[in-house]
Length: 216
Length: 216
DNA sequence: CGAAGTCTGTGAAAAATATCACAAAGTATC
DNA sequence: GATACTTTGTGATATTTTTCACAGACTTCG
Ligand SMILES: NC(=O)c1ccc[n+]([C@@H]2O[C@H](COP(=O)([O-])OP(=O)(O)OC[C@H]3O[C@@H](n4cnc5c(N)ncnc54)[C@H](O)[C@@H]3O)[C@@H](O)[C@H]2O)c1
Ligand SMILES: NC(=O)c1ccc[n+]([C@@H]2O[C@H](COP(=O)([O-])OP(=O)(O)OC[C@H]3O[C@@H](n4cnc5c(N)ncnc54)[C@H](O)[C@@H]3O)[C@@H](O)[C@H]2O)c1
Image 1 (cartoon, chains in turn green, brown, purple, orange):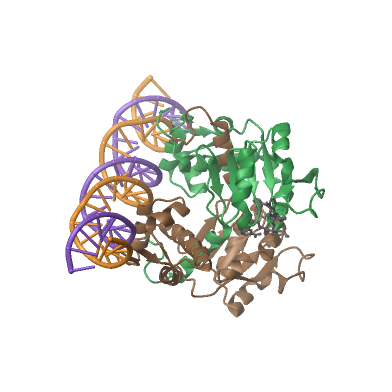
Image 2: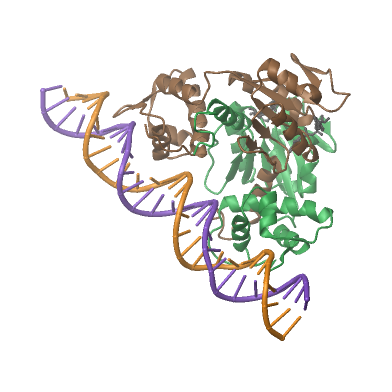
């Protein structure tokens, strides 16, 4: 295991590998080679081995990786052996879709509180979550040991909400609003930006067949 | 203007710049420097200039960029001067949130048809869109000149739906399902993967304060 | 109009990331 | 247990992307 810095893209791919082998484990497959795993994730075999190499040696020369073992190791590395409590801010169209989504639970990521600024939405129930006023964020963060947050409010509100979140002591934000958030050192933001993704696709559509198919 | 290949990340950032200066244009600001634009997007000034440099010279030495001119140029480069028709497949929680979202329209990206496999959902109306059976995808693609598609169906269905989409003649897919799609050469897929984004955040939360804050 | 200051555009350098390629270590077969 | 395969782990290499740094172009202001 090397002691070098780990690229963020590696972390991102490790989750992909874990997802894949979790499926394979379900259908009782026992081992997989780096090239097989690389194919299934549309990445190369060398990429797979290098990514895993940052964290140790998991394979058996000549045979590949034991799915059960690799699964356990990846879960450990990626923090899947712990539970993470998430606060959702903004219970509009997107927020309610997120609340309805069961996929997070399976992944030990759990939305345990939801907040909104709109008085009409306070008190609404989604499953066992009741929508709370944003003023209670700080209190609930402590009570429920919340470490992750999701911003699903209109773009104009997002910066203000981010500041409230940080003040409450949460240092990780998943931002769905199409704005570049400004946060202090130490706070980690990831952006999910549908519009931009769709726009990028439209760029490709516009540039089909002019020798730039791949932009390369 | 160079003739070199343009990195995809550059394209992605250009949309960010365009978004920013569109806001500035609204409040009647006339010019902006690369360093100002770099600050606002949390990117460096050199990054801004290099990105723009792939497509030509837009600035005025000593003064910066004319917002009106740059806006027009970026819109041209990025295909915003055309309209793009989008098909949505899957009208569950996420799909309906997308249908309700008005942000795409503003961007000349327009969901013009929605499809589902569930008989109970066929015929439902969202604004002026009526949900259609997936069997009509090919016909409507031709009729409505659809070039972009969004997959918002369960993971297990996504590969099959992708194949149907491609058969219908659509070559650009925005995929929300957490699976690695397999598509033929020439088809462009972009993935939006909330769960993974949240998972990556949890990895950071897990590794706070152990000298790996930034992974670097 | 000239001097001082600002800001672009872009090669060159650095850093980050991906790919190659192969020795070493295993497995499978007979 | 020797031979023929297979597949890992990892330096070395290649590629991609970002950052630096500065000459030259333009602006502003007195
Ligand atoms: N819905 C989509 O498909 C979609 C697509 C792309 C981007 N987005 C982005 O996601 C975000 C949410 O979108 P949406 O469609 O759910 O919007 P929405 O208008 O349906 O919901 C926004 C919610 O945020 C709440 N809110 C507003 N200000 C708040 C504040 N200061 N504190 C707490 N809550 C507040 C509102 O009361 C509302 O419930 C937006 O930034 C939007 O641009 C959404
Ligand atoms: N909702 C979320 O917050 C969220 C978060 C992360 C990922 N996702 C992913 O987004 C996708 C959609 O999520 P959702 O919450 O909207 O699911 P959902 O179950 O609410 O909706 C899925 C819809 O797809 C339709 N469908 C199923 N098979 C189909 C087929 N073959 N052709 C056409 N339509 C079909 C169903 O009838 C249903 O209407 C899933 O892959 C999910 O993993 C959703």
